[in-house]
Structure formats: C-alpha cells, structure tokens
Image (cartoon, rainbow, N blue to C red; front, side, top):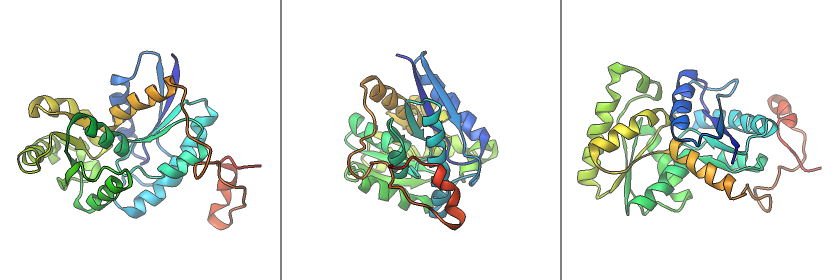
Length: 251
C-alpha cells in the first residue's frame, strides 16, 4: 500500500532533519514516501518549555501543509512531543509523537525501561509525558547525559560513548530491560547501542514510522469526535492573526 508520511523535525536545524530522515528511510516500507521537514521559523533546538511552546506553532503549520499535500500520517520528531494535541485537532490522519511511540513500544518489549536524554532540565518534561501517557509505572528512571541537542552532532562531545556509559548504569541500577533514547538526534545511534548493550534500544523516530504505517494500513485516522474535533471558528488578533488561515476550522 502506497502512503506518504509527514516527518516533522520541530526545530530549525536542517542537518538534524536530514539525520532523522535517514533513520526513517532505513525502516520505512519501499512504497512509503517521506516528507521530511522543519518549520520555516522557530528555534534551532528544543531544550525547555519555552522552546516547546514556540516549536508547537511550527508543528501545527507543517501538519496543515502535510495534509494539503496528501500526507496520510504525521510524526512529530522531538521527544517532548511539542504541539501533539493541537496537531491532532487539525489533522485527519494519525499524528504520532516520538516520545509516546517509543515509550509505548518499550512497554511491549520489557516490564520496565529507562530513558537516556540530553539535558537534566528536560527530564521533568519527559516525566510529565510518562504520566500523561499512563506509563509512568513502567519508566524506571529518566537519565541525562548533559549534552545539548546540537552537541550530539559534534564528535568532540563523545555522545555515543557517554550515552552508552549511562545506559550501562541504567541497566545495572534501574531494574530496566530496555533503553529509550530521549532525543530524535540520537536516532542514528540506536542500532549500534542495541548490539553493544544486548537489550532493546528504542528510537522513537523509527518506531513511529512503523506505528504510522500500521495505522494507515488499518484505515485509521484521528477522531474528530470530542476534543480532537476541528478547532472552532474564530479570528485571532495581534501576532496570531496569520494563524486564521493556517488551520482548518468548523464552518
């Protein structure tokens, strides 16, 4: 079945968008086309609540564009899942956040998992998500390696070695059977880490591709009954005026 997936990197760093696209292409079905994009404006990396708030508007815009271009499903490739609920309001196809996808996948593979993420200040964001998604009892711990998101691309950061070391500590101390990578920029490390650690190492980008393909093949889309119904018609003011033409609204 041919399909088109809208892969959205919510930050504006195109080198990371390309990395994410490569990871997605490696697991996508041969007949799946991928629209890999970053928003026109926003922040170069997402590392705090304000970054997420800014990025969420760009995510919604790219979902709108993807729907107009015939995308069957949308993937938000940032571990904070910024703008996920708003994106589901404006989408007809499935919208999958990589944190939600990765953590749910982990519950299918192990009774407990630990997350390895970038900065300590983002740990609380991931903790909030485990509760939102109802899987906090499965998450043993969220650990940070104190590498900025864009530092993952810098060989001098020794990102792989530091993530590997922290994952080994997690497996020994947290009673976990799987490791979830807490940043889309780590997606290229998952396979190598899994081989070296000998446990499932879950990258949300690749897992979300599989979930999206499965949902589309099953003919499923986002419910428009209840709080994911299309946004009610209204006219924004001030800096938000342009958004009036950027989201579908009820007549």
